[in-house]
Amino acid sequence: MVLSEDEIINAVCLHTAQRKQVRPTDVQVELAWDEDTGFTAEIWVNGRSQYLIEANLIEAILLYLHEHYQIRAYRDEVTLDLEDEIIAVVRQ
Image 1 (cartoon, rainbow, N blue to C red):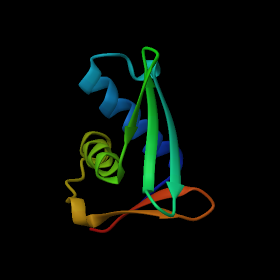
Image 2: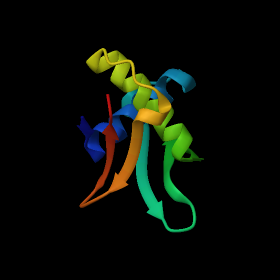
Image 3: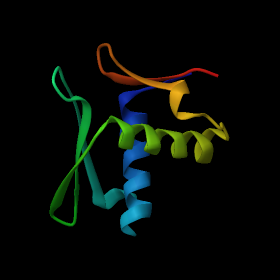
Image 4: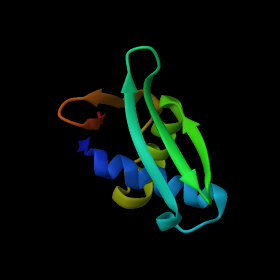
């Protein structure tokens, strides 16, 4: 299974909204890839920004998979990759 960049952003929005007790629409996400830091995201909630590392992104994706696709995946089954956009590849 492959999740698009939009689905990864949705996963981060939903996960952050649950943790911060805000609406998912109150969360803004910008995904990035850098040779030194790998996959990251900058999120904005209520005027404050926070950086997420790859492990945080995968945690959000795992929750998203469980809640929206009823898929129980493990951390080592999810890989982030860069093609035309950032994608998540889920091996089952």
